[in-house]
Image (cartoon, rainbow, N blue to C red; front, side, top):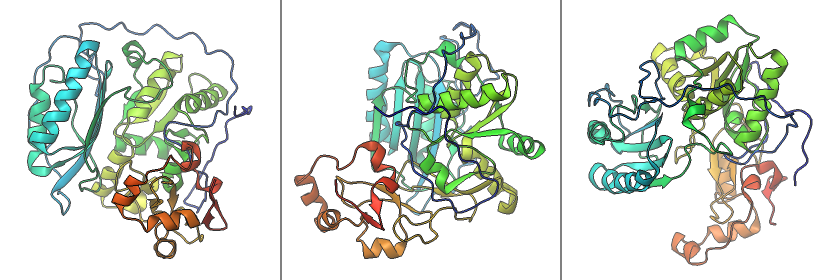
Length: 414
């Protein structure tokens, strides 16, 4: 078992230095905080039949809602060269447990067969979370499908359009599983304690007016490594639960009424974390609505990347591996140290190390981490690799922390 430390390890930046920081896992973060028992949660609003029209993500009525316009996501962005656009959305509402499996199956079948959707969708008793690519000609039809489905009608807000568009996923995978790996039971009553959502423009104004504000990056440290808001801190941990504990400790130090600003990729991690903090009695929790994705669109629309408070790339969990918000490069190649912010996976699929690799090292090491075993296996065809599939070379934590695997520019073998 990993030893706990007394305080969270934090990284704070004020400009855009090149920082070869450690990577961290999406759902596995090092436990770093020893804390006393959490204070009693404040009683939240019970799940009722009264709709909250001001909420962009939380719908607390089990009654059917009116359908939204099928053109509500317009204007549609220009598609990539392959004709696809990429977007995300999430919403919190009740789905009766017996209906979750049926809804999952219907989405899997009809979105892939009829709409050409690819991506990753999670459904559970608390709602839906989706990251997907769809042919631009079917974007309106996807909205029409959502508004025709009784369980989803009126409950999914406008699509959060990506910054860069392409077919970012190979296939469609729909899973019946929690929307976020929160590390425990997450109820709609807890999610009812919504944080204050700030539009990108309001977020920008707030951070410029208070340069000493506590700004927390709720993403993984490998995401933080290639792009972040100036002055943000990112707990160096391996699980969402420990990240929330680290943030709670920081908030306790400042006082329960002191403002905390949180951001993530598209917003859902902050919606969940913000609600949990509000439920624990922290009164001034503010999050960036739409996450870095929405802020990036705001920066592009303002036609002035120089004024962006976010510097670098926004990491994405798909084939793109990231989208540029500003041209600043904050990281270095894990093999040679050259300035670089392009993530790659080792071409040996049973290694699959996530690391930053420059074009020169990619050619030199045949798109691998550089270990002799990986270089040898990378010469096999995909079919041969599948036929000779081996167990994962690394546990997940090592797989996303290249500093634990790459030594003197070469990946080691276990």
